[in-house]
Length: 495
Image (cartoon, rainbow, N blue to C red; front, side):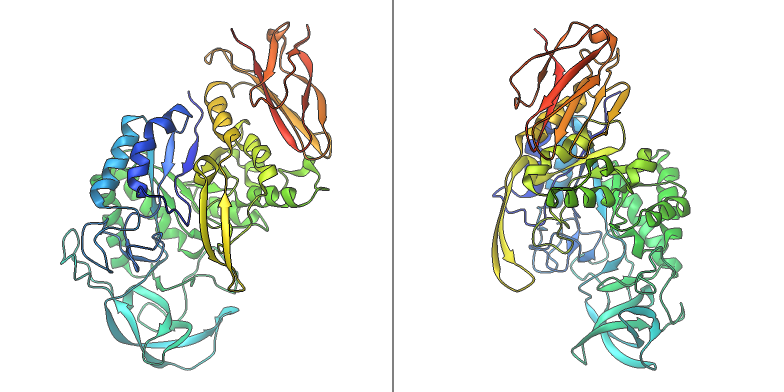
């Protein structure tokens, strides 16, 4: 079996000449070469600002760049035909495609409705701060450009639990919609702000049975239309978990398969919330290990970080079979909402820790392979120029993961700045086995065991940072080295 490796094939500011769907198709064979088994694609459907939005301000789930809506036929990423062709190109190379499903909210309603609301305390959404009053809100979605093709479902205020804009008052607040479904928000996994059901835009209400059935139907439609192999679920801590369970079970039963599902349950404080989510959803989804990302971020900023603790408090430490590990994503990249970008010197070290170990399924980030240059304003409103450079070692380690990162793992996390591990290899993968050593301080060295079957064999640093050769002794041990603030990946010298 080949190790699984994912890639997030976009970033927030993707601005290359090729649209993204064309880029995916062009790169599919290259992704196969470096060992990618599945590609996470951004939202493919029409958003509120069609030609410019990344896709998370969802307008019409059934418009994949096919209808003239919200100022454009195409989405920011391309047309429906180009999206389907991108997935076909991935499939031709044996790579799965993951669609991004944003089920928390909708944006850009087509018509105003007069609705009864109460305001809530933004810091405690269980606390009402007004009596019932009426506002006009953009809560009716008729999708006039699509004209009922694929679905005739009309969304109105009964499909939502809250909005953040009163058109007649020209005022922003968190307005709890008062309708037959209940006067407050749904119970969701996150109790931050008292109840974190409401996140943004028009918040979808899963107490409405018609909404659940429509989104189950959309799940069928998107699989049949595009042949996607799985989903990345956005913002699940703000969504009724009963719906998530029903939706996943419905698709698995409908298509008689188990779709690969990874959920974004962002938490950088306490893994108990993620473990609770796994419990209440019966382990139906993988979870992005945001806690490990946060440890990487802290380690990259603090020269005194104790590397023996790098996996402490993370999901991959206790639920490795359900953890999707990553270094950064579109939310944590510079100038984005959850900005916590891991410093460049530490990125190769972090990638070694997700790509070359047994635990977890790693997810690469587009700029680390392709780079990214963009401009945006920071929180103070100042224009900032950002250049994210590609890191060649990431591609090299992804190939090593595919070919050599197999067999028993021996850990040597016994020093505050210099840690390592070995993999013994297996019979199925020729020449497999390796030793990894990294140091966050001065040049490092460590005695480590790779196994007696390597006795007398020569190992070299596949990353090319160290030029010496290492001979494994008769007991399967050797002293391995790495440069200061660097990582070396020692593999069998062949030929």
